[in-house]
Structures are given as C-alpha cells and as structure tokens.
Image (cartoon, rainbow, N blue to C red; front, side):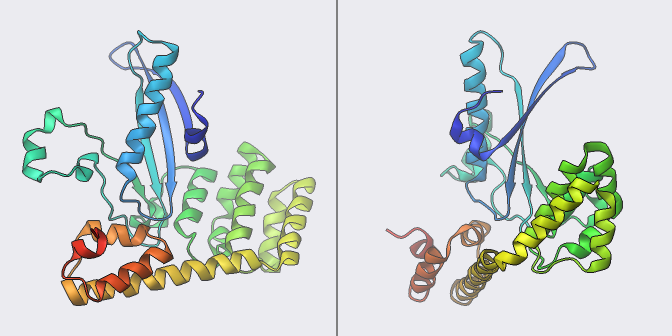
Length: 281
C-alpha cells in the first residue's frame, strides 16, 4: 500500500482482504499508532490518517467504494489515558448541540489499547507480540531484564517461529531501555535461545552500549524525569488555585514539553481562571 511520506513516517499500515460470513469480502486496512504520552489531538490525527488512506484508494480507483479502515492506538504511558477519545470532543460546541446534530457531525472513536489499564496476565497476543506489549507496558521501568527473564518462553517461541532476527530486535530494545546489563545467568539463558551468529551479534551490541557509557540514555531519562516532575508541580498549582482540573487540562499538561510547562506554571500563579492559563489571549 502506497502512502505519502509524512504518513508513512508516522504509522505502520497492514492491509488484509477477508471473506465476510454473510457473503462477499471486506478489504480492511489496519493503522497502528504507538503513544507513550497522551495526545489531546489524537482523534483529529487519526481522522487525518483515515482520510488520507481513502484519498490514496480513490486516486487508484475513483469509482470504487471506500475500504474499511481501523486505526488502533497502542498507549504505554506511565499513567492511564485521559485525553479525548472521540473526534466530537474536539469540536467547539455544547455537548447537547453535538448530541442533537449527531447524525450530521463527523465522528471517530479511538480504538485505544491502554496497556497501563491492564496487567501482564491479560495482555493479548502470542509469543513475540505478547512479549512486545509486555515490554512496552513496562518501558518506563528502569530495568526490563527481570520482565524478560520471567518470560523467556515467549522469546524462545518467537525465535522458533520468526528466527533470530525477530528475537534480536526484542533483545536490542531491552538493552536500550534498561539502565544496566543482564546478569551472567540470565545472559547465558538468553544466548542459549539464539543460534551462534546471533549470539555474537547480541554480545557485540551489548558491548557497544557499554563502551558508549549509555550517556544518551541516561540524559534522556533525566530529561523525562524532569518533565514529569514539572507536570506534577503544575498539577499541584492548578488543584490549589482552581480545584480538580478537568480532563482536557490534565491531557494538555501530560502532552506538553518542558518549556510550555514552565510558562503555564508562571501563568497559573496569578491567572483568574483556567482559560487564562491554557488558552491565553
């Protein structure tokens, strides 16, 4: 499937064509978007993705009907998703107006898989897919090796089904996201799952990270911790001055960068209301 470069850079697309039980067939396009932070504009972004898939389809077959498009957002942030899930929530109109005009207002609801709202035992998928979701769910932990060590059976099943390349991709991710190297016993078990060339690849990869001193990873971790601390500080100021914040305010705070957060803290100290902080004239 050919998509424009901007869209291709942001999403992974999979297209399937399957028989329908009542007869005929259904062409289904799956769009996957991974998010580590809530995005209050996500329904709008997903709507754009769907529309561009349809545009591409019509450019190839102008008289054909539109295909089914199912956008799936996989969220693995440190806290549950609280940003809007419907396109109509972003429309500047009273809820009662949207409800009454419902059939005439464009709508899209996110198919949101919030990994934070699950525990490891209820994650879907098999072998590598389930293991990947599990690691994403714990991606904010400082060390992913204990998670991997408790589920080596999934890694082994992935290696048997997809080969060393797929298993190495998972192991590289664990190396990059963990603040330490695996202990000797766990590393021996992991190497035992791989074939000899892949074992050497894994050792070289781990050694390269150790030689680099993980400076970039540590710096990124410190920056993320600083942003989260600023978010907590701003939420505290908002609660003290204006009471419990509505969901749209909390979503904007969780999606903002450090510079914006500091500006909002300054505004919140003297602003008469929330709109003066988050929607300044």
